[in-house]
Length: 86
Image (cartoon, rainbow, N blue to C red; front, side):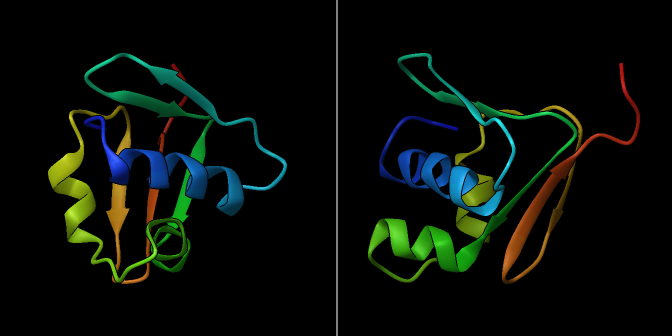
């Protein structure tokens, strides 16, 4: 994700919304790389709590610089996942 307030909130939300998973966050100066194995769920409510304001999931897609795999976007959550292992 492009570096900024939203990227930081998403990284924190990824940790909260995926208990038991190791979430890797790499600071690449211009962007944050946020990753885990197989699947990651991020809930709108958790992002809102991290931001301290309301949030629409379509704001997330605008800030994605890239991602690997597939994405399912819903009004209340987003799911990143692989359909097969490389």
